[in-house]
Amino acid sequence: MKRLIPLAFCLPLFAQQTQSTYISDLNGRSVPWGNVTVTKSGNTLTVTELTQSINGRTVPLQSVEERVIREDSAGRVVERIIRRYDATGNPGPLERQIIDEKKNADGSVTSVTSIYRGDLNGRFQLAERTTSEGRKSGSQQTTTTVVERPGINGAFDVAERQTLVVRDDGGKSHSDFTVFRKDSTGRFSEAFRVVTTQEEQDGQRLENIAQYELTDSGKLNLAAQTVVRARKNPDGTESREVDIYRAVPGVVNTTGKPVLYERQLIEQRRQGEKLIETTSVQRPTVSDPKRLGAPQKIAERVCSGTNCK
Image (cartoon, rainbow, N blue to C red; front, side):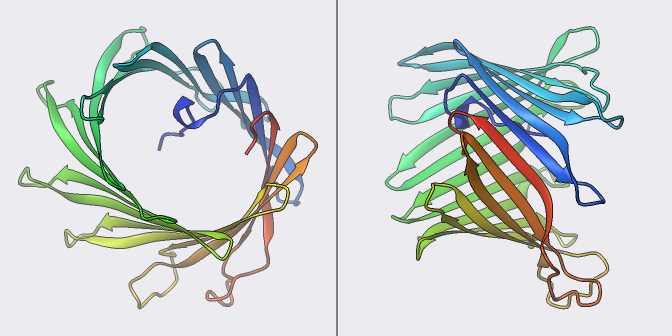
């Protein structure tokens, strides 16, 4: 699975920000695991993710460089260069993405993303093209996406269709993301779905994320669920309790629904200009799979720089 790094579309504009992550070793001591550095120079935003190699050295894991090529009233064109590295920090082939966003007369936006993958000789070849179009009607935003990839004969063909419907009902939001793929007959049918609801209740933000996956019977079934309860602290930081439900290997489950696999306790605090976020987890005990054990600290993220959130 690819590691994703936040990009310009979801990051504020600032000169530099560094986020460092520490995890607990077998003795409970905090050891550095990696960090993310975000820098902006002119119209270019660079996000670099570093990690620890097997011999303890700090090596790059992935870097993303994004720059705006053109931006005007008709839309904008963005170039994104992705560099991925192996476990020892050696660079692999580059990936180049061109995102062309156009504003339509009816207020909708059409976005075409062309993905070029490089080989060891530095040559790029078009590997994927996605076309997304968003339309808004009242409080509902609908985005349809078509994914094209080369077929057996090298010609591009539609490999996947996606729909994202987002609705805001005043204090409560709902999103439905569905992926359609071709079945054995060549027809598109539902293959994956994520339904998310979010609302404010008694000073808390409640979020429910349900993930549906295709079963052997050819139907979608609830495979995993995440329930988030978050509250704001007086200093502006946030505390979150995250319950993760999924099938647990070795545990008998007669309900057919995901069971509570893990509870994450995420606490933020400020220390001068730094934002420190500590993550602890509770998991079911071996003796009683239905009861969560004591919290164990597993990671600590330290963000320094402006706009740390």
